[in-house]
Amino acid sequence: MTRHPNLAAKYDLEGLRERMLEETSGEVDDSIPQLADAEPTVCGIAIADSAGDIRMTDDATIAFSVQSAVKPFVYALALADAGESVLERVGTEPTGEAFDALVLESDTGRPPNPMVNAGALLTASLVDGSSPDERFERILSGISAFAGRDLEIDTEVSNSEQLLGDRNRALGYLMRSSGSLEISVDDAVSAYARACSILVSAELLAVMGATLAFGGRNPQTGVQVVPERVVPTVLSVMATCGMYDGSGRWLRRVGLPAKSGVAGGLVATVPWQLGLGVYSPPLDTEGNSVRGVLACEALSDDLGLHVFGPE
Ligand code: GLU
Image 1 (cartoon, rainbow, N blue to C red):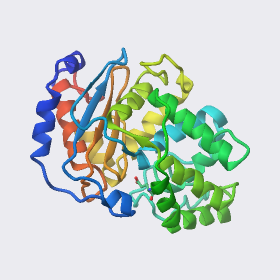
Image 2 (image 1 turned 180 degrees about the vertical axis):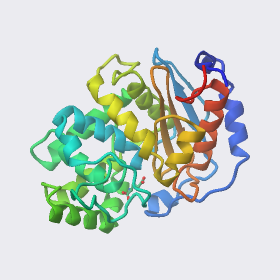
Image 3 (image 1 turned 135 degrees about the horizontal axis):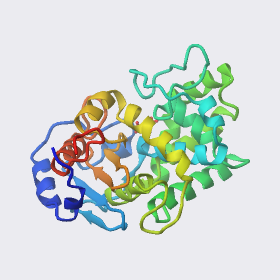
Image 4 (image 1 turned 180 degrees about the horizontal axis):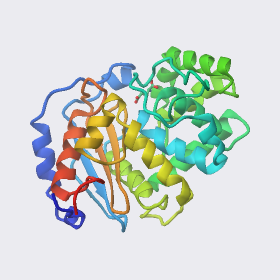
């Protein structure tokens, strides 16, 4: 494998999408009605480069709820606002458990990492703001700055997430009882549910991934969204914990920090080179977009993007 990130500008992305559409395995998530209605034949792929230029396929501007792909960005905002204390409040170890498992670190009572629900509920409580609405405004404006666009939430998704969020409430109570969560369970679940309901697209995920790739500076707008010092921590946790229980295989096979969400979105970062965004709803048994994983495998192989790959 040789490194050819400069070939991204000429890469036949539509050809890649056509190949991806031949893959028809996977199931659309049905945890809430709005996700169950997603169109399984959709596949959008986008790449953002250091100049903020985007190359994208058909379907790359279709809006969908970001779901768990928001977690690294909320973590970055919490690290920017609350500094090192975030590392004391949330661990950085992979779990080998489901993303919504009712598990905290046995010795500390902390959530194991910010890419599982317990950790994301906590990091969403650590961003600046003295009320739930202020904290959510900070999250929405921060994620918008990552994307370089004023984003909105899907209120129907957010209402369903809160209505059907008993497991997240259970995690909230567990963290209250261990002393790790300091705001109310309702406030924590409401901020997290709204964050998961922010509408993005494959195109916007590519820009968000590129903002992390370029030290927290959005390459389209030039805005420094989070301090550069927080980015290595965010990318490390994405690399080890970002792809549910497929994270080890993903890192070996694709070799990029990434995060997926149950709507079928996937964001990946090629440090100092590119941001990648994919949207395709059918999920594998681990909860990752089938075509998203395959498309990133192909891009990593063809462009030599694996962070541990040869020169
Ligand atoms: N809405 C989801 C939740 O149950 C996010 C799930 C995901 O994308 O992993 O917390």
